[in-house]
Image (cartoon, rainbow, N blue to C red):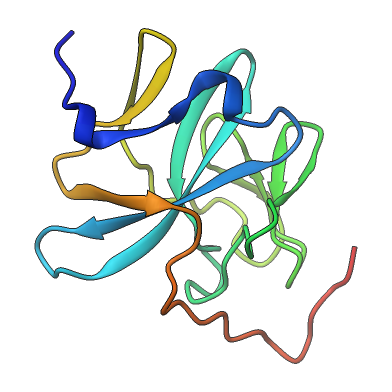
Length: 140
């Protein structure tokens, strides 16, 4: 498979096994920068936009990796839990909703962004991102 080296996110070995890997993309249609995460589950790596589906301004990974429990990504604000491999919410206020996926490709030991709606910006958080937390947070 031919992949654009400018769209290389990270090496497969750098994607953590117990949390998420944070990176920033630009939505081509709006020119808006958005955060995304990579997560391992069942031997696979998947990509998601870094926003809870209960309140979509809440980030799952706030810069140090999202909480994970039993192969699920945990939103620490309201306790929503998302299957790492499907993005489906299995518990919490957005039960049944799905995380928005980001298409990625694994090639020659690296993870590449191959989603035609986005372009890779950088590893790490979007510097202009704000996480407006709720007053009814659940702490884990």
